[in-house]
Length: 193
Image (tube, rainbow, N blue to C red; front, side, top):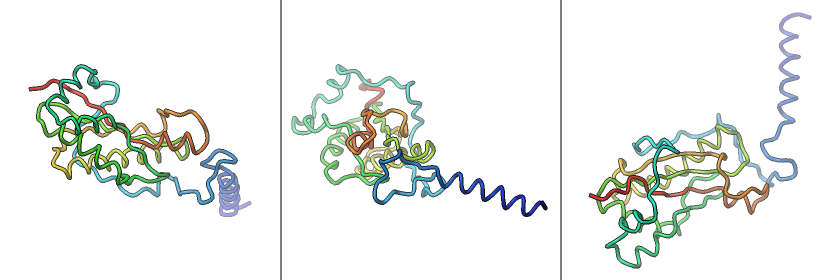
């Protein structure tokens, strides 16, 4: 067998074996599966965020958050309870209903002090590890871009992606996936001036 024929045979075997692989669990493939290969991702648009280092930043405790939110209008304070923003499958566009809550967080970040909003992007279990890390980052960057568009300095924002590594729901169905496609907003460095 010459080298060219041997390469074609090897390539055909690899292609056949790879085409049998699925990015989704058997029986859970949606009618139209999104292309979740990491080499098809558009570039991530950054907002010049600070380095996040998840796990090394200490999140603000309830007492620090109470002090941080003090002095804000009670209607604004009520909207601060929402700190999780959900996304559609394979999407990184913010839902319009996120604006009210995010505007309340803008008010906190514009107060001054050293407080940083840490935005942690998450995905559901489907897709490759690399794809989901990039998608989680795109989701967190979508929230970051919204905050920056409202006047928040990019040095008050940290973007982190956990991809599919930290699910809040363990199921292997749409109900669980819907809860796992999210960005969580937390505050760090809550010391006030």
